[in-house]
Amino acid sequence: MTAQDPIGLPELRDLALSAAREAAAWVADNRAPGRVGVTSTKSGPTDVVTDFDTGAERLLRLRLLGARPDDGILGEEGASVESRSGVTWVVDPIDGTVNFVYDHPGYAVSVAAQVDGTSVAGAVVDIGSATAYSAVRGGGALLHPAGGGSERTLRVPDPPTLDQALVSTGFNYDAAIRSSQATAVAALLGQIRDIRRVGAASLDLCMVASGQVDAYLEQGLNEWDRAAGGLVAEEAGAEVVDLEGRRPSKRMTMAAAPGLLEPLRRTAVDCGF
Image (cartoon, rainbow, N blue to C red; front, top):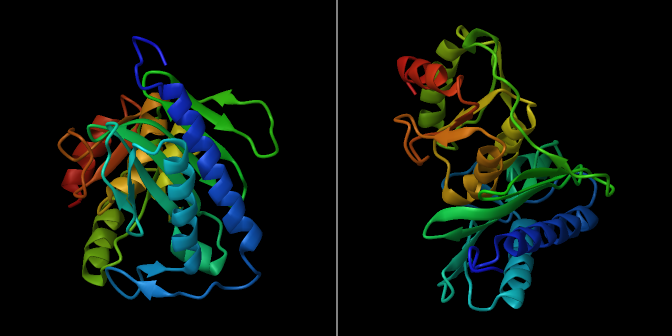
């Protein structure tokens, strides 16, 4: 904590990373083989919740507010505490719950610290691989390999032309909206290299940061879906915006390196997103 950084952003990043790792390890250690039972649904029958989602969110709340009791918290599964410090933790205990239920690769813990609605520090941990990503606003993004290998600074590679871009996306839980999105994606497919569907927005955004995909776009995301992964992508050099080039919203979250973002944005509009 310094006069220039009165909150202590690196300390917030370290807490986000340690809490996310603890929750990821708890989920991985306690998950039995086979499919996981669904305990409830949210926006529709395919938008599912498990005991692991609520248990991991409870662990994150205890860990984060135990370390910083004046902070607030906003969690996907209902955790809500008003901040007295100006810092609010935005958490997704298992991003990619459907993948988790099926034990399909692609589910993660996402933890971000926000000030005035802007992410300033955060971490994403891939539960299956234990690979972690972290970022501090203005301080860059890091990849933390599983097993304690050397950290690597993340920088998005020079982007390809749009027709050579590998683009990741996702779909809404509502069947009618999903059908409309599929039509838009079908139109987009003719303009790019190919599409990838991971099933966890936080990992999609981190994959932009690491160069595993060239771009990402998805409609319908909530703040906890993109709070940490979006910061990782930004700090790796990507732009993260909506269809109008403004702050990402439920209408659209789009991430790509400068130079690719604008042609992708224009083409997405033309394709009906």
